[in-house]
Image (tube, rainbow, N blue to C red; front, side, top):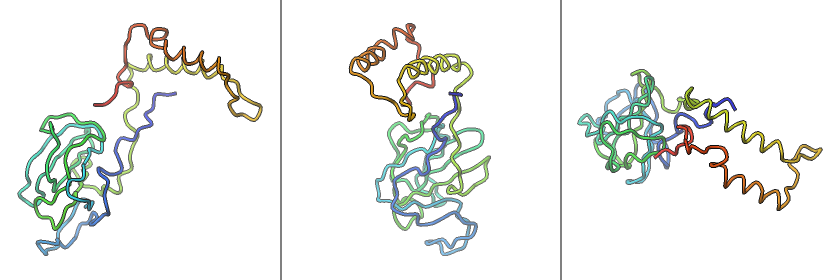
Length: 212
């Protein structure tokens, strides 16, 4: 009712994975180079070609091949605080290029083993204000709330549907009573005519628009 988003700012993981094959560490022995060095990411093992998705809304700020071992990678800036990197990709999704705006859950690439990798996996990294942090410690924060310019329209919608709910009979036990067929048809009619009755201008506020 206050316009706060119920969607989390970030997904828990950018893909459907088989297992975590390597965790965030400041001193890991590299399986190929055989030297101890930081591994500031989480390796998600998955079959080659598994879809990889952006964990949040953002802008692609880098895409290419990392000669230092990362292979094909995509880097996304989500806001002034968080940036994420997806490495060892087999390939990139169509239309993904520097400057592309992406939405949460959008396909950006596919699991591979490019660069210094012993098998197909995604090396996923998260940076907070430029400093690498453990992706598994990232607590998903709520997405941005309703903007001030959309709040008046949002409050109208809340008021409208609250009035409809107020007409639904409640039993003494506190459960919703049965609704007659005639009432259901009436509610359906209201729903069908909602745009004309409540929103004759056809205006669709930003918070109601579907993400592409």
